[in-house]
Image (cartoon, rainbow, N blue to C red):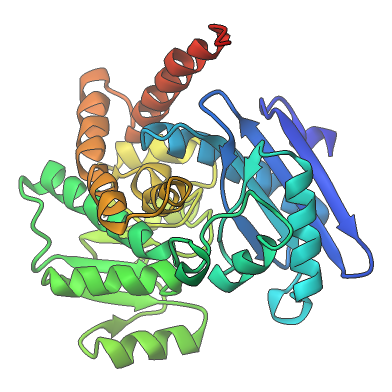
Length: 352
């Protein structure tokens, strides 16, 4: 565990267990420099606790940078529940998890992620005052994948404008890897924009649902080696690694998945191959924008306006990357770190 934790800079990592319900969870708070740590809860059958810990640490750090770039007054945190949600998830488990979140006193605010849904957050909230992404019937914003997909689409338009001189995606071939909650909605935006869409997913049911809704989409098994204009990873992280990144046949990478790059060196590899990478935590911030707005009394129009700004922020990141001769991921990190430092410093000013 010590080797995995390393010098990650996380403020707090909490292991939670309730034997009666089978709950095993890890909550990671990376930074509260800008405010309470906000990030979703992932419910996933990790091979080991070490794999779960490595994932939650990376995800929590990504949330710090995501919230900072999105202009939100929230820090970064994440939680993982270890196990198969199809067999382990129950009301009692979710309520037990809610009590653990409550025990942090608001340092961590949770929401949906892979394996958790709006209905789950409604249950968590019965034991916890710090759950977002709840249903409209319970005063929440509903499914955060709506604005996540919208934000990725805005980032993709900005990337197209930077690469080809126009944000218009009509006629561009876009490969969407993973057509679950977010990927499915992204396909809808792309089809409406006139793009040629190719999809892949390990779940046949997800493919069938997408094809039924959009009969013109094509299905492929290996999008990495497919001739594409844009590759959109929308499943789990690590899609681009030392094997797949050199084989990629797309000019742009822009998708919803968190931690798409297997390690930091992949961003330079993509830059050297003249592949334009739109940093994942920049373009997929629409969901956290949506759930953070819920904390102020949700207004969808207001939240959508905030998510639209992902287009301009993505353009700023690309411009900074060009000006400083660095990969876009490095430029995005610098912008996020600058805001966390400058705004976070204000917390040292005593307010009675």
